[in-house]
Image 1 (cartoon, rainbow, N blue to C red):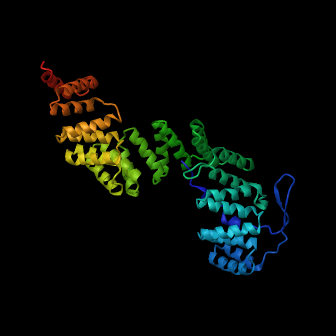
Image 2: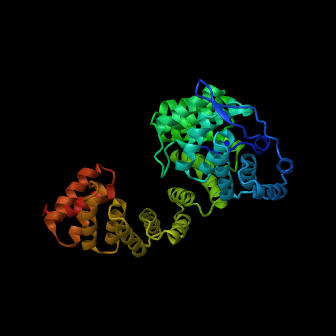
Length: 443
């Protein structure tokens, strides 16, 4: 599970509003760090008034004052930074990016401008543009903002360097970024969770579980750590511990959809009827969430409420009419309601939507048998056999289809295969098979 995102890493506005961006020349120290020389620039009255408005959260007044000042002073890095901050505060993100970029050009060694630009670009889903800005921030002296703020830049990089959909990232870099952050500030529970997630991404699940436990020791109410640990416990089928963990978390956070979904997953895996009300509550709150709908329809079917399950299947199929998995569930529900022709149509559509779905071919073979279509039964069984080995049920379908078509040798062979595979599990069908073998083999 991933944390809420880089938005949590954005510098507090109150801190940014008090920041004085250096306008004097900058020098590199012998250790490679960039040091800010004393700022001898006198803050203009107009910009000072704008910052006073910022402190009052009077964004419109601040915006007006800064825009007027920048008309005459377009390269004032301090004012540009403040204008970017004001635009960001009003969710005018594109304007904020422009102002921050201009601030970086005006003050190339401004730690705050590079950091704010990098964080905003990351938040906007532009990792390739955000990364150079954050890297540059880690190379600059944060000045009065201190080492903790520089550590914030490293933490943002660690989040950014994590592989994600559409962005390859680099796990080794992400881990090193976090190490650099911890050199500058004390480890927080959020750091521990990030370390757990990086370990999980790397496939080191034991280390990830240990880190999640450590985070919960520091902050027992940390839902992201709870969700992360529960995810791994579920993956390992350690349902008892996952249930205990999630039950306590859901009691404290009864409306958290992610925790409730995990709790329901565990209850379903444990075959506990308590899963139904949990999922019904989730579904009522999130009726458009297909994952929740699918879980609930499957739980209804497991509980034997095929009509309720099928209502959800039909609703899901309105959105994705060619979803083979839902079509199979729909067909199974119709079978239990003895609606064989309709079930056959559902399975037939499922096989066309996904010819590799063995359950769809099984359902088609069974419903073809129930609707007296032995040739279609054999065709479906042949397709299924190319995907999965035959079992007692399919052998019986083979046998009865051949028998209906008066193919005595194949029918007899399939009845024998069925009896051998059944092993006493289907006594009624075994009796029928033996009776038919007496006729077919003239015994």
